Amino acid sequence: MLTIGPNLQVERATDSFGCPFDKLYKNQTVEGADIRFFRKGTRETSLEQVTTPASDRGFAIGISMMRGHTRRIFHEHHATTYAFAEDSIYIRNLADPYKADLAGPFDFLLLEISPASLDRIAQESDLAGVASLDVTTALSDPVLANLVKTLIPALEQPNRASQLFVDQLASAIGTHIVQQYGGKALASKSTRKLSRSHEALAKNILLNSLRGDVSILEVAQACNLSRGYFIHAFRETTGMTPYRWLQNERISRACELLRTSELSLSEVGTACGFADQSHFTRAFASAVGTSPGSWRRNA
Image 1: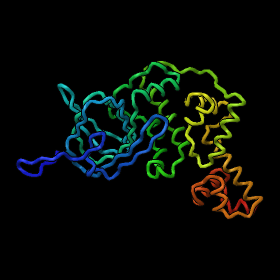
Image 2: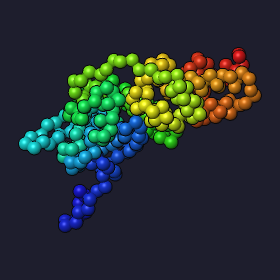
Image 3: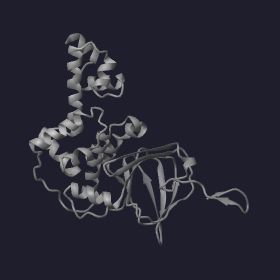
Image 4: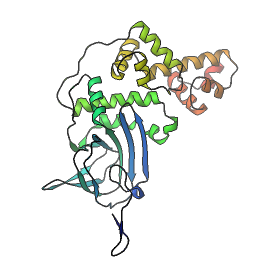
């Protein structure tokens, strides 16, 4: 609520987590594999009280990118103050109303998982029956933090992000969350492999989308498999995740074009599904150990 005069008040526009938009210098979002990802940041040292009503949106998970932020969370009969360190997390059940005083600047990576999405993630992680997550605040989880930090480039440039990569990483993040915070059930260790026909079909679909624009769900549905089963089975069958396999194919195709054609480096990169020449050069050097131009000269 923003007070304008002695008798006049207007509602301040807030995001879905209750933060005023005019206080945020970071407000980014990307979506993949049943999870919505956000990055929210403010440089303000003092914020108004944040409140959000109960909803059926599911669960919010926040990962702190910095230290120095504190919040005083109000419960029915008491209030508790928490200090956030880097890589500490919170999990909120959005079915519960929320009220907190926020102090100090923050930079949070946020995840939102609906009840239906949580159910799908749990089933694909062999943890069927998990319908809730343990509510916690300011708990250190460097594994989850490192996984989600990998999505920062996609949050900063969602139009250039590979949907295949975002989906695949979101699936790994979802599995970690339900295994760590969704109960004590143990995941099945059964071996999963693709049939030869499904392997061929999946590889063909991936090759027809060298930029990685195809989603994991689309490939899994073409094979008549669940997304989680497909990811595990593809890795068991090929020894690589779908994104890594496609990246290797891109590099192999680039090597062939560099060796046999007179295409420029930029044209080779485009033909192999890379966003631009700098993206091609970084990926090629990371995989091969030298730049495309140097490799071509020595080929």
